[in-house]
Image 1 (cartoon, helix red, strand yellow):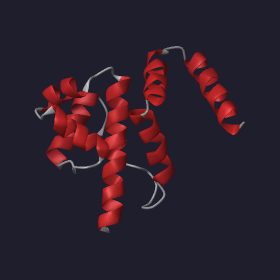
Image 2 (cartoon, helix red, strand yellow; image 1 turned 90 degrees about the vertical axis):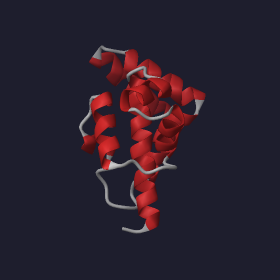
Image 3 (cartoon, helix red, strand yellow; image 1 turned 60 degrees about the horizontal axis):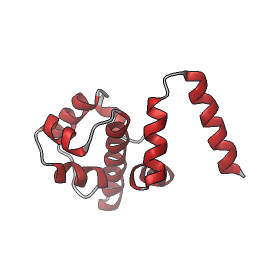
Length: 125
């Protein structure tokens, strides 16, 4: 594995952590308290600046209620650029954050599907 691909995986894992944290309505400070690190460290993990140790990733998976493998991309190296762009848009822009937060509060699967279709149609236009 090259240093470049390792960094890309770090960024995807961090972005997926950020998406899950926000979906659960947790602040970076709250998640930091659950796993025993500083808020700044969570921020660095989510931005892909710092790699996450196995033990810390395990603690994060428990705190976020997902298996460890849920944070890793399914595709081979180099094919996760589009996902990373999407995840960053959801975690770093106010509009993306609002969309992710609102979507997480919708419990009706039919409404979620309808909203997803609407977004796909708007994106294609």
